[in-house]
Image (cartoon, helix red, strand yellow):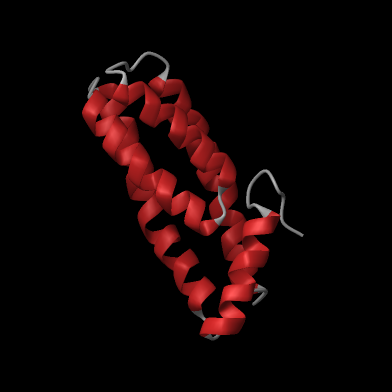
Length: 122
């Protein structure tokens, strides 16, 4: 069973229901896109925080938040909301710490996704 703090159980159930309607493979494809793109976005967030680039922080956090919500990565989406709000307020204080937190969340989330893919539980 997945850790609800990592992957949201309700969202996973919704995704599985979608797969029943749309055909097998749609959730796997969603996870594979997330696994490919999320690490790059987390890296860009870290770069934006280091460069004190509030606009880059806001834009990248918004994009990753959407991807995280779609894939059921609720804790990542919550951290992205906080980063996005900092950027929108033209602030970067605390952004590095949030980016470090996000890296840990990404590691746990991608591990869970890969496990679900390997066990073919999508």
